[in-house]
Length: 138
Image (cartoon, rainbow, N blue to C red; front, side, top):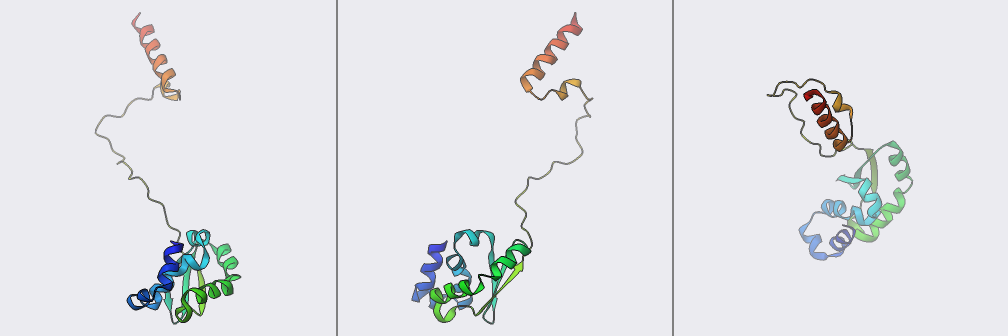
């Protein structure tokens, strides 16, 4: 993504087809590097001010110290289209995809608790159940 951001920023055809705001958002990974780009997200640009979502307040405070360096990187990449200010905001944490939970009801009748259920190893559990069945049969 970093190379793509640098390429898009340098191409004159990209400047004709994309708005300056779109170029700034696309150049974010190139301006900050892959590690910071993975932990942050440039979300919007208004009146020369770039808004960036970060994970927490600690990230916000630390990145505020690098604000001038990031702005210089943008100026090198985008020249006149570069933002003049950056505002770091704590973004809403993204939840990773989760599995759908099965319904709490079941069509089969509830099974009685078996003492073999407390055996974690499936092979030993099967041996225990078979030996218990043999003992009850005799």
